[in-house]
Length: 470
Image (cartoon, rainbow, N blue to C red; front, side):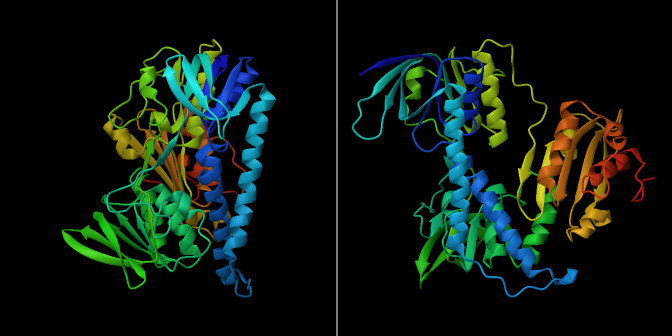
């Protein structure tokens, strides 16, 4: 067994680990990146990228079916799910292969192995096959092991009837009926993907509404669309279990004190994710976890053990790839001796439902809870010339400001291309912008981005294309 000495060791090559490894290489730090599976982690392999590929493909299919209002007619479009999966897999292969190349190109060593802590500065690497294990001694160790789907009682994953997000991304046939346990981001993104292909979906959500982490008004627009497309949403629903009966799955749920049954072909369970902190003897390093198993870190992503850091899903919410990447780069600079902290004012959130939802900063209720007197500006896409021209007018832009000085506290968008529009909002909040900064910035016409400007103007009582509040 060889002993390898490194300045830094990163465990996990997901969207937290690989940016950290690349940045360490750029900064001249002798580092090693260890990954037991595929480079890119959940996001690139079975999360962000493949799901958005399928979402985009099914949106195109849906648009082709509903283009007659614009004077365009097609023959009946057909879906080849197998070919769609091959196309998605090609995208994943290109990106994951690129990750390994970028890491090596930066000067950081990339190793395929499973890591096991032997102490706060020492890790044993178990390689695939019969290759003997090695030990790595590192001054700095970064834990970037990500998360996995939560399994709930009565719904053991079998990858046949009961699946999680990974299984949903690999279906080779479109299920006629799908029950989605959990009305959050993952469940609805994937649920609507198959709804566009013809699946009848039923959403069982335990809370009083779907998308509980999103602005309530934005969530209502998505709920309306799901129902318009034939889906059913049951809130206050507790999924109890399921059974096989007459060639179909029967899901039992308690709704308002009454047990109801729902027949389907596939059950997608999407009730959240848990951190991966087991299986690597993390207790031998002395790293402190919270009561939910997440690693506790400070603004430098430092754990309670000097020289050990945590980034990404493993340190808690929000579980977002871009948050993980930012934390990974922060850690790299800390290890390199820079006076860097994680002081991001906002982590934007995007939900690739139909229509899309995106947000940055506080919503009105959160702002009021923090003691702000709030003023809200809102501009509907139904008044946007660009939205009309692309036949996507559902939704709005909402700007939350401090009534005292018009500082932007939050921006929430539901509608076409919300995922791209939100970056302007994130920049505005990060730089401490006021509503005037957005309203006085000349936005090109005709674009969807004008809606952000108009919403800021509306918060000031200066909107041009909608009535202002008196």
